[in-house]
Image 1 (cartoon, one colour):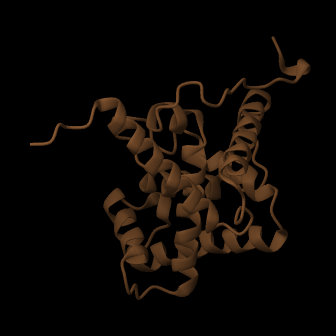
Image 2 (cartoon, rainbow, N blue to C red; image 1 turned 180 degrees about the vertical axis):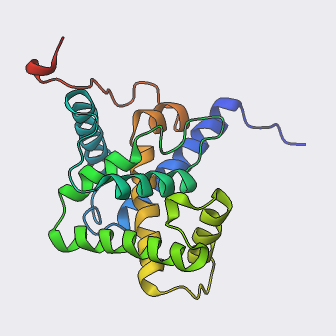
Image 3 (cartoon, helix red, strand yellow; image 1 turned 60 degrees about the vertical axis):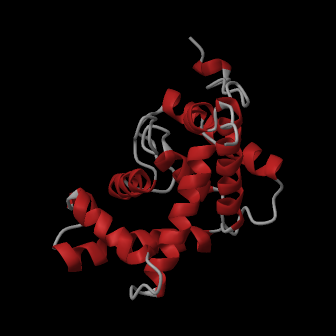
Length: 202
């Protein structure tokens, strides 16, 4: 019988697999397609630094989303990457990450995402008589399953939106401090210093 791989080797394999997942997700986002691995992670780090600055200066401020849209994105991202033995997408502030990311893309791309959010609520309303954030977790999962199964009968708009938010969630999570250090196991691989503006320092 062959020796089992050492734990460190297994962790590296998992990290590399997850990094490949990040790059695959990034390649399906028009604004990130064609970027190198270094550029993808640098872009993610930059956005997360903005999240930390915003949190220090004005925790409730949003650039693109209204509060309902923000909560809908938080729910969706947590369904995609839920908390297990490590924090999930909500703890990694993926919803805020996506809000800042969308503020930097074209108006048409931003509108496409917002229309997808509207579609999700309309579909949830049709299926469960309530918007997504008010549905039960089982109902929320059912809707995402409808969108993600092979040969889905849901509309192209809904399927396209699910692919986009899934890609952005993976990109946001695995370039966050939580994702890098607790999932990818790269302690200190990217340094997050928080807000560096003198006016925000204690």
